[in-house]
Amino acid sequence: MAGRTLLAAIALLTLPFALPHSAISQTAPQVRNAPDLAGIIGAYRAQRATDPEGCCTYSASVFGREVQFHVFDTFEPAYEAKNDRQMIVELVPKGETVQTWTRMITFSAFKGPGSAPVSTAEMQQRFFNTGQGCEVANFSRVIASGRLANGTEYNLSSNGCGSTAAGGYPGAVSGRGEQFIALLLRDDQNVAVLQYAERGAGFDADKPPIGDAAVEALMSRFRSIAFCRSKAISGDCSIAFSAR
Image 1 (cartoon, rainbow, N blue to C red):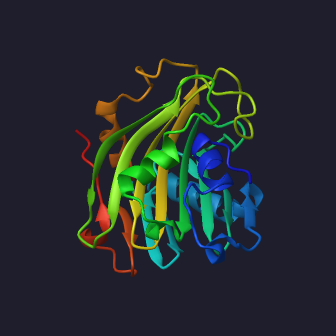
Image 2: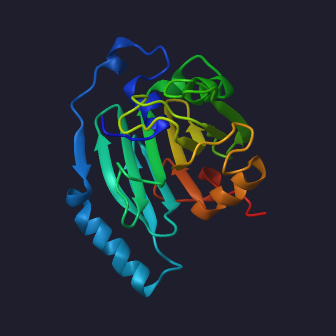
């Protein structure tokens, strides 16, 4: 597993839910690194050169859902892994890597845990409110939650730790701060997480780089985030946060 964020370490190393044995059995992951994604990266760069405002859109079919969101700034795909039970895509700014990133967009999806007998609020806490990988107490605060018109539940949270621990996850550096904003989407079977992360100097847990009041404005940069059962993207299956 090559995810180099606190969320990836938490979520992909072990799913924090009781699942039937059939759901735990998984095929070997198919992995693509930056060289394998050169065609997509080239297309992003070409589109940004001619239409920076229109570029770029991430779109994929994931476990029976059509996923779509805007990829802002110079973010481009750098890593992808998937099998029959879970998948992860990591995007970093042009010139950065999945080892050296200062900012990262991650989309992860998990087949099965949406049916777990826990509330979405409890699921959010199990995913993100953990001290694994932290030298000091971490934080996990809910910013917004609700239900889309098609029944998908969502939970938007601000999470992280002001000082990561060496060895807390692959590439972790002692004393470095990491914060991630996570939008958890849950239907009756599956769970998906769209994450924006920043890491740099350590910080106090009550004074993270992205304050709670700025979270929705940051998420508005993804524009309309779709999580739909068909290719017909609509307001019933998408969410957009305010830039205020």
